[in-house]
Length: 201
Image 1 (cartoon, rainbow, N blue to C red):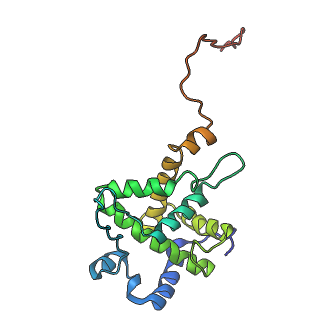
Image 2: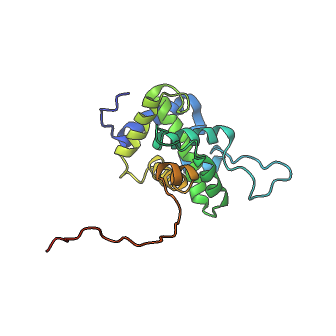
Image 3: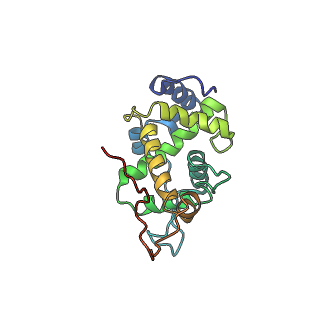
């Protein structure tokens, strides 16, 4: 898949949904139908002794996918760690586990499923198994079609970006390593403007 080619997601998705549906059948029904027939990805079952607040929202496979998605958006570099090191996936899981917005929860489960279908269509492999360049290419399709908010995968991508940025820049790595925030410090002297000849307007 070439990242130089602009892809119309709404037109192209018909083909990858049709191809995927041929392979997987009823499990790839549109979201409302999938919800009615019970084929939408289910939430992980709570383990004995777990409360609603401590139960996992993502399955292990979904958590890994979110890790790789967030790392693709904010990768590690020579200056600081990326989203994976900042445990952004854990932050997102906490947000989704604690939210009372069932529509957001459904969007994330469906969005993760659709992302993997896109990756299978464009790269012939899951998102997690794809190379860095292949992952970027998939997210570039969504970014280029960011205005198509009637599509669940686009709405998911927008929410993914927002939560990834928020989770990263509220983490120790984002605040101290990336932004190099030194914390509040008491000033013994207020230097102010050191320009002795301010420019006249």
